[in-house]
Amino acid sequence: MVGICLGEMRRVATRGIHYLHKLNAPNVPADIIKKGQERVIEASLTLIRERAKLKGELVRAIGGAKASTSLLGVPLGHNSSFLQGPAFAPPRIREAIWCGSTNSTTEEGKDLKDPRVLTDVGDVPIQEIRDCGVEDERLMNIICESVKLVMAEEPLRPLVLGGDHSISYPVVRAVSEKLGGPVDILHLDAHPDIYDAFEGNKYSHASSFARIMEGGYARRLLQKLGEGVKGVYISIDVDCLDPAFSPGVSHIEPGGLSFRDVLNILHNLQGDIVAADVVEFNPQRDTVDGMTAMVAAKLVRELAAKMSK
Image 1 (cartoon, helix red, strand yellow):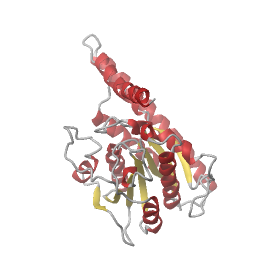
Image 2 (image 1 turned 120 degrees about the vertical axis):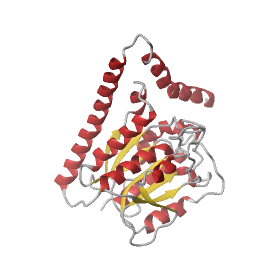
Image 3 (image 1 turned 90 degrees about the vertical axis):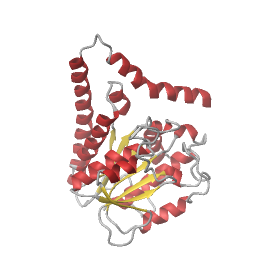
Image 4 (image 1 turned 180 degrees about the vertical axis):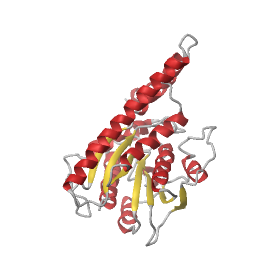
């Protein structure tokens, strides 16, 4: 079964490359490829824009929300240096969030069924865009623009579902540019992700925070925040947790944090959380009962409650 899953994962991951080769064939005029790519990109952004507009209108109509969390999925896994299963994570996390085995109330007492606490604008169609031959530099811009579209609809604040950790670069960039300055980042991870260009890939999941600091999008990378810090971005790589709590990750690192350690950090945080991401959950390494999916979902639930006000 594992062999079948891994084989399917590789086929999906390389499909875009095969399409790219076909699209770049000598007998296909470059302007046709370019125009086709632009149509697909515009359609993708239009979907995010209209869904964000609808959710923003709903929250504003209800009233009483200064900040409302909105999920945005970025199912990207090809920048992982090992396994690419994180591309399949967003739907599994959503499924676990609304699993019937639990209820919709967070530990802070907020109800996720209240749109002022949580809405969802769907996924950036990463694979469909890559199938058109769009390369990573442009893809990062599309992710960045998608996040900005969510933030354009007050009072929505993006909580992004990865995906590998490479997505944090365009998301943080979007938040920083939208707010007009660098943010402070609380980065919970088993790895620093500050290689300049891991294995020659400047967009590698191991290089995301190098790109963030290089671009001046973050003021500080922190492991702990004190009171009074404003403009906080939280990035949680689920491999920061000990594998006893989170076995479904690509890079298993024994000796990590307990789940309660992480929740205590989130619950005690005093800064203004402007956006966040939860990344690197790999469903293809999870237990059969989806334990890590539930862990990732719980992180999302508690982040949503913390961000909304």
